[in-house]
Image (cartoon, rainbow, N blue to C red; front, side, top):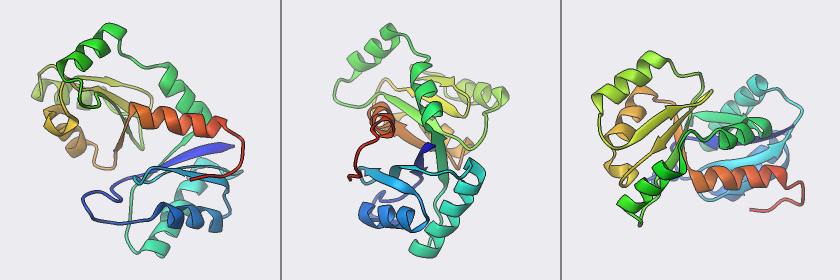
Length: 189
């Protein structure tokens, strides 16, 4: 089965530096096949017969042993990535309005969670951070559509506090990872 792993908090602000060649080598050493990495923020795709629970623990402990610090490990299968893309809960008009507000920044983000979000948590976040940003839920994801930079989003800041182990990726990265999962060709970085 093909999976994507998304590691939280590496290579951000000059902290927790991990070269993607080193991450790729770790995943190979853990017995994962056809490993490919994408950009410097801890994204990789690979093949394995391991189930998600075993895979999660294998990567988590292998990462700590190799790099000397812990990073939250979020895993999605190829089918899960396809579904979260197919189920994008924003209309074309909502996306266009966000892009028109500031054409210079990314607007659409996915927060990958290790569990299904509770509606009570989502309602509380949205009530506390009323504004033009839009938050919608998926199975184990949150979809965020920002009107300005994510760095200025009160909603994004609140999501990070409530869902501490979540890691965000922009829409381009999510789609690129899925495309890499579909590509059964040779390994590349």
